[in-house]
Image (cartoon, rainbow, N blue to C red; front, side, top):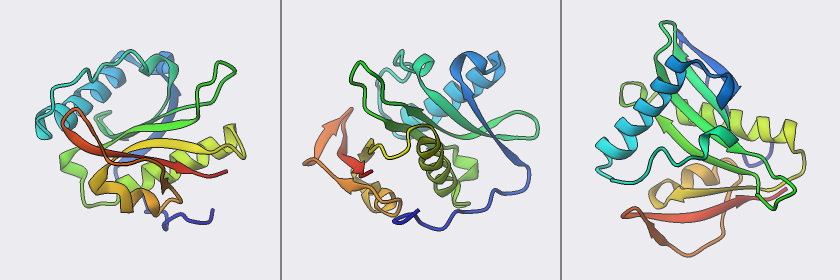
Length: 161
């Protein structure tokens, strides 16, 4: 996997789960939505429709504690015949688990899963501008000018096939 930073090891007490939205338990969905709300809306002070109606079409990777608490997550969308591009989104780590390279783990897992399910396809994402170098470490290249999304500077990025 050229252009990818070294995979971080998963801290003790966490385990990962790939699942379609409909296969997540009610507690897992609640934990995922609560964590994303806490990070994106409360910490980043950003009022936007976090529950965007897209989760049912995504494949989700959750990092959970032994008690089932969701600590980090990412979602991917796979290209389809309707023109949807393969995309990674909602990369999020709860405040309590930051600094442990869980973001690296999430991105490596997401890129790996896309490679398994849609080999050879480019992967798109919308990055908060201050994280551009982080995503570049996984082979993503900037593909747009800077733009504001929900009051936060973003850039589009693509990982070529």
